[in-house]
Image 1 (tube, rainbow, N blue to C red):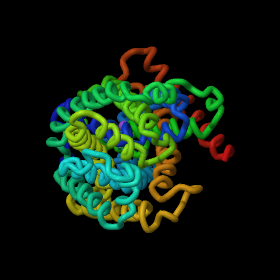
Image 2 (tube, helix red, strand yellow):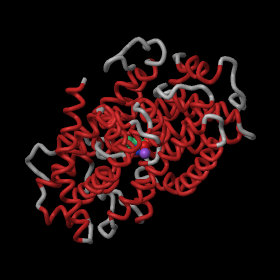
Image 3 (tube, protein in one colour):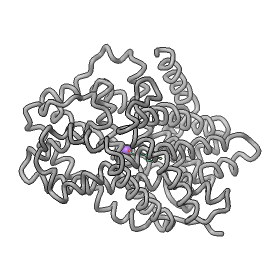
Image 4 (tube, helix red, strand yellow):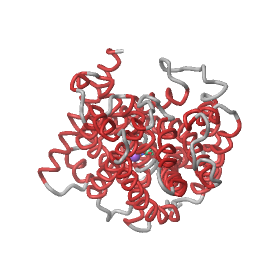
Length: 445
Ligand code: PFF
Ligand code: NA
């Protein structure tokens, strides 16, 4: 059977950008930056994107393009008879776990969109947005309903194969989201708390540079935001025809993704200080802060509609790429049709997601990692351990299993100086650095 292929290079670019830009840039970036001290985190984060993230994204693309199969199959084809395909298996598990909580947060976003559409979030509810967030997420059925709706939408599109409609929609939605974010950032800068917010985001606390937890969190966020480590970008690159150029796409995606995150920070943190929020609020942070911003601005209700509509679209294209990982694998190995594979995977993910959602309600006392609830725990384990381990294995695969010639040829880098720097980073720096960060942060605990 012939595998799907991107119709054009643009299709691949849009899908990969769609995968990268999502809740990670706004929701996860803000809350992880907030919990890890702001500016120190931001500096280390940007360093990780440039030094590791972008080279690793290229690594993951190269494997997929050379392997021409799903995350597991590509390793089997490129390294037959070895254990390398376990890297892909870990990705399938990681993607499943990430989507299980990602879809819950997408459900929250849909709920917000709906409440902006019907107008009842246009003004601050009694008790404030924080209280109303808590009240509704602690109910059992309503969050599950929105999460279910979201999963149905994701499964339906994945069933239909490589997703042209979505990519086209992203062509408009992503620039629109970028423009809206810039407008919001400018507005946030006029708020009372702007200077405090900016100081939090841009004035590093040098004592924190010795804190291994900040490095772990920044590394995890860099990989999460670029969608690397679980084989989603690998799978997308596997649908590429041979004449596409990887390095330009990689750098473009890396820069755009980071710009989105920084702008999100400029929107969120001034508002947190203005409206008396708490930067360490965790996952609910943006769901409390953003509505306060909208409620305080002229025509804020309409802004809320636009913002949550675009956020849902950005999250949607990221979710599609996550679901693609297990679906492509199950489709090939269990001999299920794409449709059956998407339904099976979607159901498993939804089921895990139910526990995540209940973690904000009847199971809020359940903690897995330290004092973290179910969402925080799965997010922490996947982001800080599974993604770094996945990217590290991919770096070792390309840096040590492939020959230098193979690696460089498949990376499609043309400039000799860039070739050798990239190869050096992948072969030596990345594996050592990830190992050191993981170990010191574990020991530090
Ligand atoms: N990069 C996405 C975001 O920032 O929202 C999240 C993501 C998508 C992570 C796909 C991993 C993945 F495979
Ligand atoms: Na991202």
